[in-house]
Image 1 (tube, helix red, strand yellow):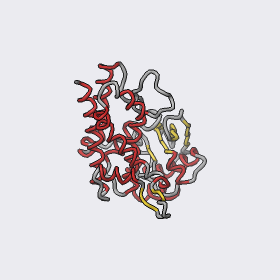
Image 2 (cartoon, rainbow, N blue to C red):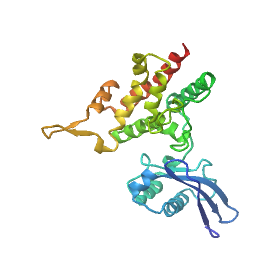
Image 3 (cartoon, helix red, strand yellow):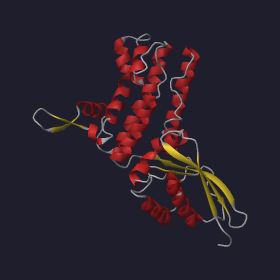
Length: 285
């Protein structure tokens, strides 16, 4: 390499549960590239890294040791999270060196699986938002900016769940959808969470038995979410026996889960998407 290479890494305003950086690579020669890099707080906790900027700089140096500067890095930049990174920062850097950067690029996947799964859910979300704006004057969901980036969520939702951890990670994304329901009565108690507030609002629109049917999938997703963190997975019976919580068993039965994680994820996803469709169809009447 001829000439000196300079890394300039700037922390960006916080959006969601991650640390975002703007990375500029200057040199050697006339090289001058700028791209984003994101580290989720989940992966920083797993790595036990308390200085995100140092971690970002370490990763950038390893990335460019692999790809060089002859061509520009992807404009979308790089993303590091629990689903694509190793257990330590150094092991993740080794993965970059051994396997390349593909697992960490933020280029949106455009294969048929993505189009069928992740993008399809966001299309349905927009459809429901538009319906609510036209009929009620507000969107069904508030912005996800404080939770995740839409394009990254599309990728994550679309990737097959290879094990229980990846399955639960995707359930957490759906739980995030529910947490961002924007539908509540004007005088709703601000302490009430989004699902309860939506149920209270819905009572003015449908009968109680219909309300239960329309919101049951949301509740079952929330029940599955109790498996993460793991300390909410079990109860202790009066006899001192550890047992899976009733809510989780109920949700597993509702979604017909079998421990075939890829199939299980598709089951949960399809039922969730249909629940959004059902809400719109019911409220059209």
